[in-house]
Structures are given as C-alpha cells and as structure tokens.
Figure 1 (cartoon, helix red, strand yellow):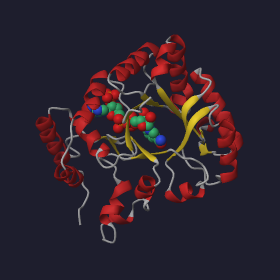
Figure 2 (cartoon, protein in one colour; figure 1 turned 90 degrees about the vertical axis):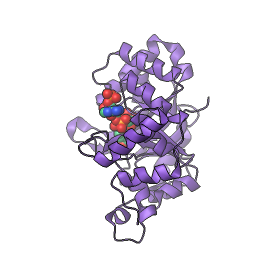
Figure 3 (cartoon, rainbow, N blue to C red; figure 1 turned 180 degrees about the horizontal axis):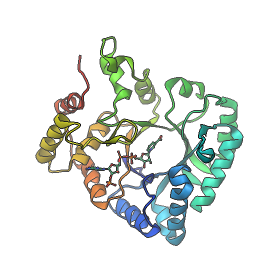
Amino acid sequence: MIESKIILGLMRVQNKTCSEIEKLITEALNLGINFFDISDIYCNGEAEKKLGEVLKNNPTLRKRMIIQTKGGINLNNGNTYYDNSYQYLNKALNNSLNRLNLDYIDYYLIHRPDIFIDKEEILKFYNENINSKFLNFGVSNFSKEILKYLKDIDIKVNQLQFGLGHQNLINREINLNTNNKEGLESDDGLFFYMKRNNISLQCWSPFQYGMFEGSIFNKEKFPELNDLLDKLSLKYGVSVNAIAIRYLLMISDNIKVIIGTTNIDHLKDSSKALSISLTKEEWYSLYKASKNPLP
Ligand SMILES: NC(=O)c1ccc[n+]([C@@H]2O[C@H](COP(=O)([O-])OP(=O)(O)OC[C@H]3O[C@@H](n4cnc5c(N)ncnc54)[C@H](OP(=O)(O)O)[C@@H]3O)[C@@H](O)[C@H]2O)c1
C-alpha cells in the first residue's frame, strides 16, 4: 500500500464517540489519507481503546489503513517519566495491541527518548518483534546523536514538531554562523542527517506554535503570516490549511505531515495540499512572514 503524505493523528479524540471516529477515518480514507497516528498516552489510553472498538466493529477498515502507535512514556498516575527499557517497551507494545484489537501494528515508535536508553536493549526489542508485532520501527523527538547511537537498528521514522509556527529543525541550516538566535537555538544538523539517511520526517502539530499554545491561524498573533496565507489561499483556491501543509511537504521527499483535526471540513481542506505547488519565492516569503530571519 502506498503511504499517504498526510497522516491523520488521533490525539484529540477525547470528546469523540467511536462512531464519530469511524466517520472521520472513513472520510480520510476516501480523501486518500491512509496513514493514522496514535499513542498509548493519548487520552490516557482511551484513544487507542476507541480506535480498537472502531476496528472491531468495522474490520474491513483495517485493510485500508496504515496504523502507527507509540510507547515509551510512562504517565505513572501524573508523575510522568520516560522509559525506553526492553521490559517497559515490550509491556507497552503488548498493551497497545490489546487496546487496538490488533495482532500487529504497521509502525511502532518510541515516543520520547529516555536518557537511560541502551542500544542493546532496543536491538533486542527490535529483533524480537519486527515482522511479528510490528512491521516498521521508528522514534519520535530523537536527536541526531541518539539516532547515530542506534545506527544498527533500522529506524524508518523520526516524528518531530515542525510547522510554520515552529521551525527549529531548519532554522539552524538557514541561520548558521549568524547572531540570530534562530541559528543558535536550533537542532544540530538533524534535518539533513535524516534526509541523507532516508529517515522519514513526520511533522507533528503542523498548525501549532509553542507547545500546544494555539494555532498559527490566529490573525492577531501572526498578522503578517495570515495576510500571506490568505493571499496564497485566494491565488490557489485552497484553504490556509492546505498552504501550511504544502509549505512543509515541498521541502523534501522524506517529509510527511501529521494533522490532528477532528473536523471533517478541516480534513477535506487539508487534503487539498497535494493538489497545488508553491514557488520557491512563496516558500521563502512564508518563512519570513512566520517571524524567521533570512540573514
Ligand atoms: N510525537 C509527538 O511527540 C507528538 C506530539 C503531539 C502530536 N503528535 C501527533 O501529531 C498529531 C497532530 O497534532 P496536533 O493535533 O497538535 O496538530 P495540528 O493539526 O497542528 O492541530 C490541530 C488543532 O488545530 C485546529 N485547527 C485546524 N485547522 C484550523 C483552522 N483553520 N483554524 C483554527 N484551528 C484549526 C484543530 O481544530 P479542529 O479539530 O476544529 O480542526 C485542532 O484543534 C497528533 O494527533 C499526534 O498524532 C505527536
């Protein structure tokens, strides 16, 4: 199955019923979005449970879907910590499969890096479960150095925050060796390391700024960006959501974008990102309009 460039994330389904989620998934599939992201921590496990119910009630959906889940964050009744040990990941994986009513998952990701991560334990976890409990393996929020440390493992994906409101991942490449803070505070070559090693970059929260502080479509907070988004939206006849997604997808072939809408109109709007192309000049105008300096 060819993977869609747009992934639908199911993090915000706390107020959705199983039949509403089934409708959202069906709509996504009809729009050509066949990749779905979830995690054991979303809605405290309830998101996976609800998806599991949907898959049980409508087993034909599963055949059309690529499903990805994540583990490695222990919510620990409010005293959260990260655990990437062999033992914890095995337990988390089995719990996810049980909640999802699945024997195997298409992608399994470590959600956040645990400073105690041990490559032998990850290798053991990987070797014991690849092609049985998961078909592909990946990580999320991992630095270049940890990826290099895990180089004996076939890491297909690194999921990172990246959107018009959060561009740390590429700011350093554009602002290197300047006094602009964007060049100093950014990730150390991770973007090109992933591109060179063919690691898929899945951009999470593409419409948010900060850590879930709100959406970039807030005209008061981002007036220049929204003026330009509106202008491009008019020019191309698609929504601002589609423009914001295209901005990311056009940078490199190894990019996918994870949207988190639960609104069918926003889903339809976003799916149109693939029907347009922006020019390089427009890309740089959006980069600058989203408060990033070009030296
Ligand atoms: N690996 C990680 O650490 C990590 C962290 C966070 C998220 N994720 C993944 O990334 C996915 C997406 O994250 P996200 O939900 O934060 O992404 P997002 O798509 O950037 O944000 C979704 C939010 O933006 C709103 N929105 C969409 N279009 C809008 C518009 N035109 N105007 C105003 N608001 C609009 C949505 O509301 P509507 O529902 O009304 O459209 C929703 O509340 C998650 O589901 C999850 O799978 C991963």
